[in-house]
Image 1 (tube, rainbow, N blue to C red):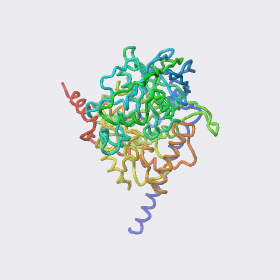
Image 2 (cartoon, one colour):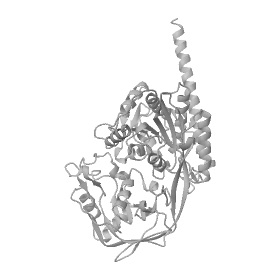
Image 3 (cartoon, rainbow, N blue to C red):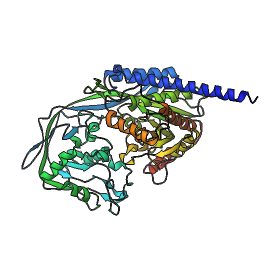
Image 4 (spheres, rainbow, N blue to C red):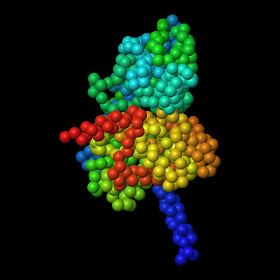
Length: 549
């Protein structure tokens, strides 16, 4: 008998290796298909979307899943406003002297208003970090009247560059970005203040990405279709390059660095840049288009109304300028065709096992790259109530450099799913490493955040959140992969499938997410937000409301 044990172990290892090889081959084929020219970069509202939606539905059907959209359909329709700026007739800072601005070099602009043109001639006001956070005793606006003005923000939080002992130090999680640091919040706040324009001063460290990423949408923007009384007041929103910002402040006699330092104090007040106006007259092409989320499910057996959800986004960036290899489609092989492929593997594994007690929903979201719009629309118009949604687990960019000794946690201290991550990672012989650059605010930059805002506990697997400790090369090699991907390929044509990909690490993360979701679907546990999380009270209220007679 003892002689047979090594043989049995070898056979089991061989079977597992073959299963891994088969899974890697399926993932590769999915990514190569979705990132091929046939899908034209998977842009919402295009022929590329039509092909993508058909492909996703066919794959879910092949796996044996059921439609999970409204009225038993595979899709949830998402009405989107699509805008694109034309060539400006006017674009300058005016005053004693006029300073022309080059679109894409000095400033990057877009709009989410359905207007034929975006025309502004307005004073410019510096609002520091533009934070209004009563719970942190911080208000950068101090009641200033910003209606009809153009506001200029700093990116990130007031404590991002704060030195020890400064009033802002530690007010916003130190190096960990809060939602107040995100560009989305700043544009939303500009609209709440009645501004007609909003510019964020670009800083690579503070934003978490370079100018090349800022300009990658090419003047296009998207929003959920809104009624006239719910439209943003901001006619143009975007970014101003650091060098252009410094010229702007100097032209009004202001020292940019001194104002940055002043913005780190709670007594900061908005500063109008005397004698300077922002003048723009830009044509806008706009249309309402209907895009789609694709939703599939495995019905639960005993508690089918309770839903465990997996998500990944299907959209990418479409056509752009040819790169050095002549590629014109920014097809998002990693971001996020690889996430979609991982979701298919999780669904395949769950279909091979007995059905779970809870229903499991697999969501392929539209318009993530346009501001998390597909998931935002779903959570505002849910097919399954948020109070009955157990958790959302999201795959969005997985590292392709090989097997790891760890898994990177995004959003440390938010909820108990991180405890599940540690438990399952240990069974893989891995440990949990907190994200390496929490100041980049990745917790607020993927589709899971739409669920967090509604109180649903979430977990994000994202390969650029921190340098993985690779089995071959360690943390140094993990950082080299991040630097190469974010520096060259993020939102670019370079994000293409490659023979150099090593999917071992991605498959570890896919297996981890699948196990956590499967355990939740087969059990009765409800993940909880931890004390101190800004989302805890939202969940408690939604659960309380759901229990009311």
